[in-house]
Amino acid sequence: MSDIMERLFVVSPHLDDAVFSCGAWLASMPGAFVCTVFAGIPRDAMQTDWDAQCGFQHAHQAMPARHHEDDAALDVLRATPVRLGFLDSQYLPSGASGQSKDIAAALADA
Image (cartoon, rainbow, N blue to C red; front, top):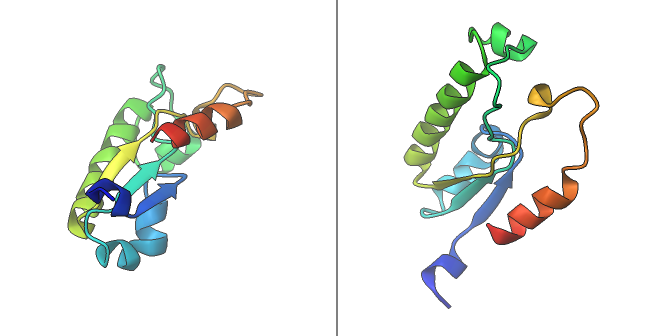
């Protein structure tokens, strides 16, 4: 079995979920991969309530900052980020749905 087949692969919905929920486990498994599903950056520089509460003017500030924060946390844990480009619900147009099959396919590919 190759090295890559022996590494831990954690699926995380959002950028901080894996680090907060299983950071100690990740730290004990150097070389793990953390695949974040909703890590996409919306095309429009919209501001959501959550971004505003976090001090960001718009998503184009928020998401790169969150990626940078995630990189730093995963570096400490010696894990490698894998980011899918799906948008979190706060960035989706009202009533948008139907990502399940696309997400499943992207996870299978990852």
